Amino acid sequence: MRPLLQLALDETSLENAYKVLDTGVDQVGDIIECGTILLASEGKDAIIKLRQRYPDRKLVCDFKIADSGKTVSSLFLEGKP
Image (tube, rainbow, N blue to C red; front, side):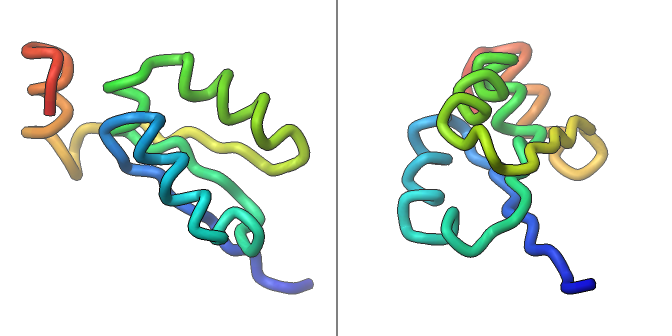
């Protein structure tokens, strides 16, 4: 069994996440991770849009605040990173 490469999208916008994927890493990654910061800033739209754009890729979501508490709390409380 070959190892899988997971691409973590911990960006503050879907636009920035697309820029990362458009560098070509989307061609080598097996799993796309919708990270905590992206989920906090874009909500479930990030999941929906990534699924539409990459229907054949494994998509996982990582939502926790232990690693990025300051950024995540400012997204929820102030609406900006």
